Amino acid sequence: MFSDEQLTENAFLGGRLSLLQPRSGYRAGVDPVLLASVVPARAGQSVLELGCGAGAAILSLLTRVAGMQAHGVELQPEYADLARRNAVQNDLLLDVTCADLSALPDALRQRRFDHVIANPPYYRSGAHSQARDLGRSVALGGDTPLATWVEVAARRLLPKGYLHIIQRTDRLPELITACEGRLGALEVLPLAARPGRAPDLVILRARKEGKSPFRLHAPKILHQGDRHTADVESYVAEIRAVLRDGAPLKWPDPR
Image (cartoon, rainbow, N blue to C red; front, top):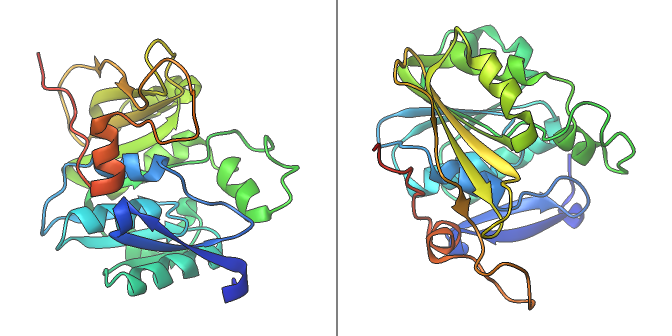
């Protein structure tokens, strides 16, 4: 487990959430916060995060939506322990299971959830094998195929439940293929750093027993201007509200 000297304490959501993170290792950025912001959850519902790390995504969601039942699964024991500590220090209720998501314990395999969220490794296994820190290497380049993440999520969802997953754009075809026969009503929300830039990331929404046709939305732009000109925050107002005020990021209305 991490000692106190190995950790930093970082503010998220404008200070509404405080997370312990390793000084050297995988550290959460804005991606898990953006993932949490798009989930249409409400009090009384349940949520499962696959690969919860230190809890940035699921605890961001619990900070925004009070009264949810929440469970996280994390492969690495030291990060599972951090997620538990972070939940306690923020007075949030979160159960955390340390397990491989492809070999969940029986008790968890008997449960179903209204929402499943996931921020799988962005790179295929081995892409970050030279990373000095094992935790960061596993977080960025895991061994578990994206198809397994989607299959496990689909099995854990209640009928009409939602999966939200954030991933690199170049791996979107894998995600869509993995959903076939398991989840429907697919929607894709691209995330572009600046106007005119190709989206580096996408958030995929899929629904258990969903029947609506596939929808590809216009990109959400994260930063103002076409390039970085100064060492100051440049988020557009909508994204700033998500990151600093804990606001939800709304999906475009159907047309």
